[in-house]
Image (cartoon, rainbow, N blue to C red; front, side):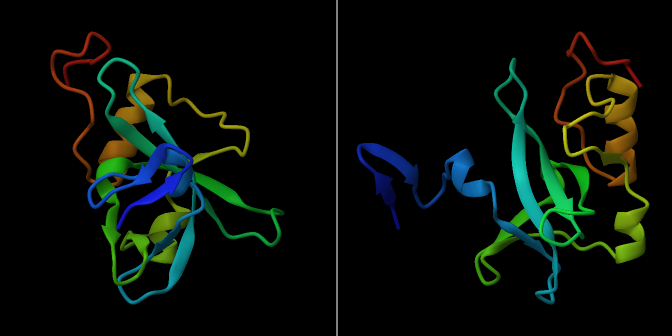
Length: 135
């Protein structure tokens, strides 16, 4: 299926525009909603999607918490029409957080390594990355 807006292609069978990812629910395999994708973060050098920022909890924008999820931890599930993430609520509440304004230490490689270790995710950067600490 292909959706278009004017002459811009926003979705094909394998690709999706970032504005269509934003607002997509994140659910567990059983369908329970965990949160919503607020934005995606793309590595400027490689062009790889590095993270998704997910909102969790709150009501009408109040009390929401924001989490940086390594992109590799999310899988799109067509049956759920959502990104799938299987974590318990306790695991999620213990995850590294960020503020609604995006303040976190994500510009620091040690913080990024901590996030990837927490989610047991393969980092999006390679060994040849000049910012890599080599660990």
